[in-house]
Image 1 (cartoon, rainbow, N blue to C red):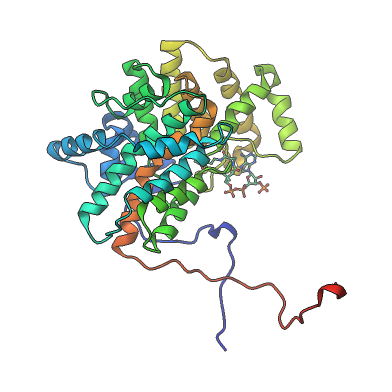
Image 2 (image 1 turned 45 degrees about the vertical axis):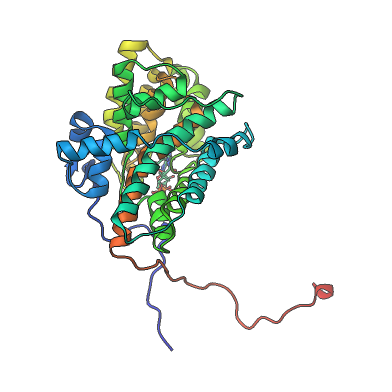
Length: 380
Ligand code: ACO
C-alpha cells in the first residue's frame, strides 16, 4: 500500500503548477515583469502588439519582425460571415463573455487542421486569435442592439481599430494610446485562474481555439476578470464621497468583499493599478471629470485605514473600469476587453506548455466513504 504524504492547499495556494519564463510577480514589492522587463517600461515605451510578440516569442521583435507581425494581425481581423451569422443567433441579453467564449470555440471549426508541431500553424493561430477576438467582441456589441457589425479598418492600428469598431468613430489618438496601454497592462500575469485553465486545456494537445475558449470561460467569473464591472456598480451604489465610509462599514460588517481590492499575490498596491490611475487622471484632464473617481480615491483611503494590515490594496480592476467608462465602453464589455489583452499571455503559456508538455493530472485527497451498499429507490 502506498502512503500518500501530501497536504491539501485550497486553491493550490503557493504550489508551483509549472516552470515558466514568461512573467514574474513580486507581491511584496509590487513588481510585475514580462520576460524580465518591468511592465511600467512596456506601458511607457512599447505597444500591445509588440508586448504580445515579446510574451509569445520570448524576445522583443526587431523592426522587421514587428512590421511583419503587425501586418499579419492587421490582415486577419475580419471574421467569417458564418461566425457573424452565428452571433446573430445569440440572445441579445446574453453576457458578451459567453458570446466571446462561444465565438472563440467556433473559430476552431474553421481552422481545424491541428498541427501543433508545425511552427507555421502555431504562428497563424496566434495571429488569428489576436486579430479576431477584438472583432468578435465589437461585433457582438453591435449585433445585440440590432446593428450590423462594423468591418475592421486596415488603416487603423490595433487599439484605434477596436475602438472604431466598437463606437463607429475613429478615436482621439490619446484615447487609442491609453486603451493600448490598458491592453499591455492586462496581457499577462503568471499562473492565475484563466491561465491555469488555458494550460490544463493545452496539455491535452487540443486546438488553440479550445485553449482560449476555456480560458475565456474562467476569466468571466467575478473573482477574476469580472471584478471591474462590479467596481463601477459599487462606486455608483456608494453615490457620494460622504457615503464612502458608512458603505464600507456595511460591507465589512457583512463580511462582504470590496470589489477591486485584494489579490492572492500582491500584498501592496498592484503596480498596474498605479499606472491605470495615472491614465485615468490623464483621461479626465482631457475629456472631463468623473465623479466616481473622487469616490474611488476616498474608498482607497478608507480601505487602507481598515485593511492595510491584511495586505488589502487596490488591484488592477479598481481603476480599469473608470478608464474604460471614460472611453465610452459599456460595462459588460470590460471583461471581454480583459480577454482581448490576456489572450497574449494565454497563447504564450500555450506555446510554453507545448514545448515541454505533460498532461495535467493532479491527485486528490478522498474524503468520502467506502464499501457503501446500493440502496434500492423504494428504501430511500
Ligand atoms: N475585501 C475585503 N476583505 C478582503 C478582500 C476584499 N476585496 N480580499 C481579501 N479580503 C480579506 C478576506 O476576507 C480574508 O480575511 P480573513 O483572513 O480575516 O478571513 C483575507 O483578506 C484573505 O482573503 P482571501 O479571500 O482568502 O484571499 P484570496 O487570496 O483567496 O483572494 C481575491 C484573492 C479573490 C482576489 C480576493 O481578494 C477578492 O475576492 N477580491 C475582490 C474581487 C476582485 O477584486 N477580484 C479581482 C482580482 S484581480 C484579477 O483577477 C485580475
